[in-house]
Image (cartoon, rainbow, N blue to C red; front, top):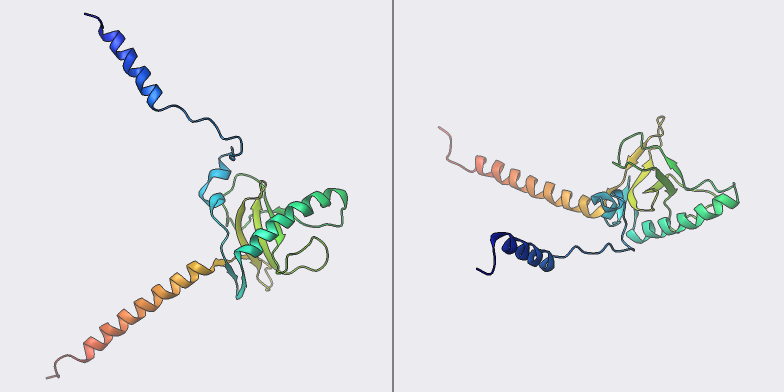
Length: 178
């Protein structure tokens, strides 16, 4: 007999390893677990912040500008942003420090007046979401809604109302009472 059981096992193991090699790590791919999370990988979408809408491009421009402002902030203390966001409302599940930067159109450059809208990103500049300050006594943040999700919800509610209207209409159009 040319092969014994041990040799057959080793040949099978080698064949399996050859057929499914371990992929090398991409040096450009994010290595931390947070960067691979669903939230971090989510694409920026158009948002509605209490009636004010911003495009995905506004959000992307804001994040890009925040990187530049971060570099300038170390050289010139008059730059207030990006600044740490405390996440007191627990809008985002992130183990790393979050930062806020004013969301405006055109993009806030780092100095001057800014509005109540913010882009929230993690320390790797991954988009986490958009918020706005509610102009009330609490001055708390409120999460902006994705416009696409808002439209889907409106259509869903409209269909539910139409369905309810049909049910009500059927109840009235039945047999005449006794």
